[in-house]
Length: 347
Image (cartoon, rainbow, N blue to C red; front, side):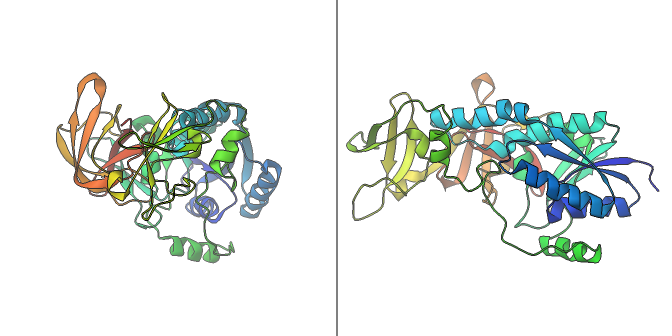
């Protein structure tokens, strides 16, 4: 027996359930913890997670973070869209909520660490610093979403599934007596629950500027829109501009309430700027330098050069132009398997 106490973030799904079962099998004293956030079916979720915790023979604690989630994540999400940005609430939630307040409360309850079902790997280097590596399953690697974590958070976190493929996790579930049906996993943001983003924002009570012009990259007005929060860079649907070839959103200008459109070739950029970079090691590597950069979750890292610029920013120059670079999203920097850091794209 290890004698150590593990808090496991539980959702009732296969990943968190197998995480809890594995740690219990390894001899840890396991306690389940559940985050109450903005779930529309909160009572049903709590009941489902409690049933799984009972099945595993572990105690479950519900930690109410609804007010904190509203301030840290939902306000950020809504404000970003109204400012013409494309936010990534999962990156912010992991930094401030899951590995922030939730981790703090789990540790305060007596746990030695928080374990989650993320598909990433954590390693301790010879220098005593913690390194975060991609999960071995390339289809499930979730390192991108953890690009804002810091050493203190990594030191008190564990990721038991990082060395497994998803199929292996289902097999483990069966071996551990946990039966789960294999199903296609939702890519929705958790609090949207299938709702269209524009409709969610329209009903949020925070709608600002409404109708405005749709203009081409050379300034020609070709239509009207009902609010820039209905659009993201790269979007084709909903523009309603008849032409022989499709139009795409290539930019959003909140100061003029304008949606800028162009053709496919107008979507590509060889350079972007991030306002700041968080380095997971707590210190930057040698810069300027060569990295692989991921500008969205469902993208393979691509070669790029990173150079510091004034006022704490960094310019990233791609070897090959990248499609639909979206201000508000995050650029995550890698070298090989290791995630080194990340920061918000500003232009």
